[in-house]
Amino acid sequence: MEELDHTFKIDGKIIDLSLTRYLKKLLKENFRDLKTLRKSAKDLFDITRNIPLFFNQHLLLVPIFFKNGIVYINYLEVKKIIINKDETKYYFNNSMAITLKISRYRSEELVRKAEIIRDYMLSFD
Image 1: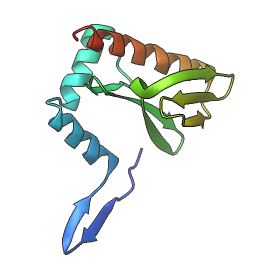
Image 2: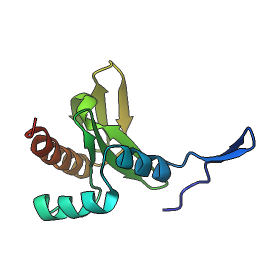
Image 3: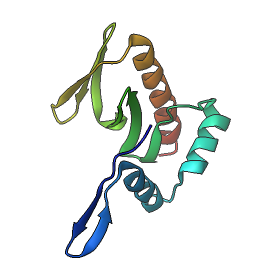
């Protein structure tokens, strides 16, 4: 998947606001890196694709891929999920909701992965 150019010039400085760069920065700030997270997910949970990114006790980003894009949701802020045949509705703790057009199978797989990693990581608290 090709990522769009998200660079901007502000006050003479070029600033990169790409999702990939932002995620790497967030990982670094939480003393994690993508390579280690991927290896851990594979070794511990046998998860090799669409790996949820665990940053801390408040942030677990679950990637949801579409034909021409990607959305990350913070699974730790999800209060309720309603999965239908061709779409899934996520209700968040802040009373917001989002409906995503993804199959029941993909939704259930994402929830399973997120819950495995969430339960494991939060067991250390």
